[in-house]
Image 1 (tube, rainbow, N blue to C red):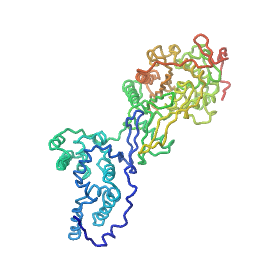
Image 2: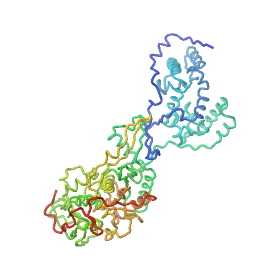
Image 3: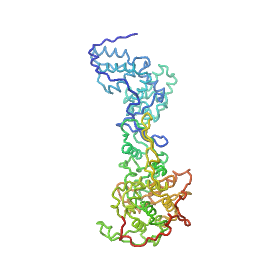
Length: 639
């Protein structure tokens, strides 16, 4: 039957110019950035302004939801021209007789054009209703019903800042739109009419009433049987109030930083980026648990309240775990201690001895005199008083080989090695191995460098350890492996080889690993078989403690995993009871490494070409007979 609606010509003029319907698709809607771990587990959903939309094709939305939506919102959807003729007639008659607008009769297509072109709270005028109807007619003439439904299901507002079916399914039920049950689908289909009033979070009783209305509409449309309706109405539903907390939050913050600064992509721009990261969520959870347990178990006694851990795959630089603090939700917990430089204490000696071996200043067994040492200046508050360094145990040990001096973290031998190598050489070695925190000119650093007197981040220390673990090949930390747009088109792909640089010779790296993995080298100060060892597995490790007990560290690696751990207090409060790396950070490192490596092969390095061997000791060719380091080194400083 043909129905003709007669209205004054001025009403059409009042509708104004209509926007173009062409070129509109769900893929162009603003939508969230989704950040995944390396295995596809969702870490974070970042929406513009806190809103959430994840566009999915109609084929990935449960038919139960689309049928429920059509049944309750527009049962003639597949047959009408985009408008409800009866509703338009009622609105027109009422407007011209009673001077008021009747809203009833909005079709799915009208609701869609209202969202796209008019706005969620338009004025109640006849001109607006006419404009809406004209747009709906134009859209129906231009697009198929399937295309309109696809766009509607990704556009419509479901409350709790969720736009579209996929975001709504995740927000309320922690599931996907394709996996919705009949009970869940009926609940969601009832929301667009009044998202707040029908909210299952805010008004659960009204939500259930609305769900029953939807189910009854589906029965009337013969989408389901009365028995199915009854079962769905009584089925228990678990509703999840909206939560913005993400998994691995410090890592997610780091990824967002990488996107903005390195990839020039804004994660909050509504472009629908899909970000596939290096993180292994299973390892991340083990790392978080290790940090939390140690802070809870020993933090009160030793006076530390926070901890951080970074673990890398040394073969690629991929960040497998990053814990920026013990509790992201606590006040100040958003501060990322994995990226904030802290004094590394004796853990920095990794770089000193690497530089010294590379420069052929020492070998594994070079004798170094551990005896009282005084520098004419450089100590005291004014920098003019004599500087008299000491070892942690306040004792002197006479002539000790380099490997024991390193393993037992003796300070005086380390200072002598640093000064003979040259402070600038040590700075440059650290930088080449991945330390980005030392930004001043190399000549501006003093002798306290080797004792960890200058702040370095946990991420930097993990990178340095990873460089040794890949026999001198440095990979800058890689948190993002791949980025696509919402349609799956690639925008960025991480290339391991382009991020690889041989910065330490393989023989030098092997010698460092030999010294750091021999537990006998540290028995003097730390005891044998402690937290720096892993049962049945060769592993390199080094602790660090600042002189004022504000920071303590453990850094270590195998050929497949490099991990750095820090504990302390973000406000620089001094720790208690002589809290050192061996009692603070080492238990975290040990617990994490033990679990992370469980079930993996027990591997160590094969000696690379370019090494000489005498007994159990390895040497760079020509360094077997290096002179001992004995005298007062303070008179001449090599910068």
